[in-house]
Amino acid sequence: MTAATSAAHPVLRVAPAAPAEAAAHFRASLAFHTDASDVAAALAAGGDPGFVVVDSRSTEAWDQGHVPGAVHLPTALVPERAARLLDPAVPVVTYCWGPGCNGAARAALALAERGYRVKEMLGGFEYWVREGFAFETRQGPQRRTADPLTAPADAAHCGC
Image (tube, rainbow, N blue to C red):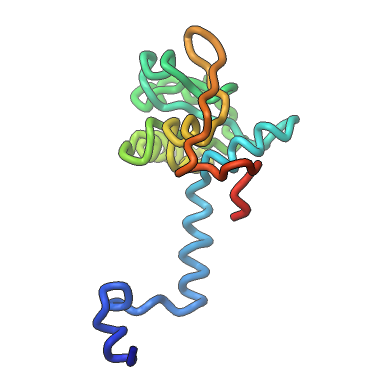
């Protein structure tokens, strides 16, 4: 394939960024996002993970299932409850339902506007469950078998 042909292909219609520009972009992206697997590994390591997890969903959603140890702080209640529930010196990781929901981003924005350092957990509660991590419900602790499309089979982590 010639340079002219590859440039016309949809993948390369817009050329990749220069390496330094790409590095800056991906570094910035990682400053704003983490994922369920990394959060689970940090929480499983024991001790203080150095952050607090915030579930930004409704009480009904929280009762249906949430990350163990998470703080329940629905987005609409951030202005009135954040200072009472969260230490501004401790970074926050927000999550909502899943990749089709921007509730975690709205909660992260509300917290950042109040001076908190915050990241969004990509995949939200959906991917937490789909990757086979334990969760808590109103009825008690639960865990589902990992979905092989979202978690490596027979491995503790994907190696990425």
